[in-house]
Image 1 (tube, rainbow, N blue to C red):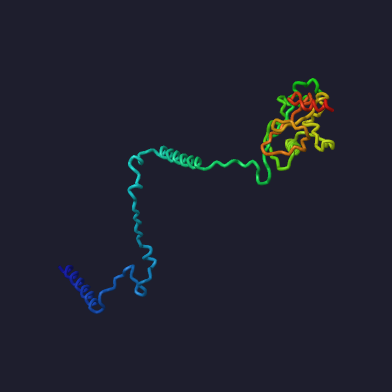
Image 2: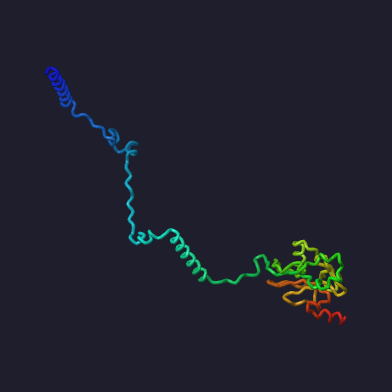
Amino acid sequence: MKKHKTKFIAAAIVLAVLAGAWFLGGAPEVYHPTYHPVAEEVQTPIVLAQAVVEPEIVEVDEADEPSEEALEEPAEEIVEELIEEIIEEVTEEIAEEPIEEEMTVADDGSFTVTLSVRAHTILYNMHLLHVDKHELVPDDGWILPPTQVVAYEGESVFNVLQREMRRNRIHMASRFTPVFNSAYVEAINNLYEFDVGPLSGWMYSVNGWFPNFGASRYLLSPDDVIEWLYTVDLGRDLGVDWVAHEQRDE
């Protein structure tokens, strides 16, 4: 009983002390994290750290929502459909665009021509060619197969041949003939005139026509087809007869 009495007395004393403090100094101040006794408008770091960011609410249109069937559709099929749609759109755009004709002549005055060098007639007359030169004749006769090359305005058949032979490292020999005021091609790939008889040598044609004047006087045009051919019969084996007529007239 004495022990309980002592507890009651201690509790009464504590209550008396608290009651006195209340009446003398008022209620004790309560700390709040957002309260600042000096400048209430300043947001303290504590408040920033404790601030809660509310998630942004985005409204979704029902038309944009994927259907249940689309969600169940495999990803590979979706990708294939998208690719097909893109291809169809691009194809339609290309079909609608006007087709412009390709310009043959470039801004720098260049254009393309086709050049070839062939000695197939020698293959049928190898017995007339010195044995040391047999290896110079390709098995198919083509020294330079038909090749598209660049030419420039004002250039001649001779200019293009000379440049392309040098570029392809194919031997070529020529001389200038004052009588005809033109260059004359004596040899290509070390196959000279008269190597396969007294009526043999090199001739040229442009678009299937064999001009009766020198190669350096024939100015080229876009898309010309130039052929250098070896003849063993003054052009007759190539289907040219005017050379023989001129020779007889002389």
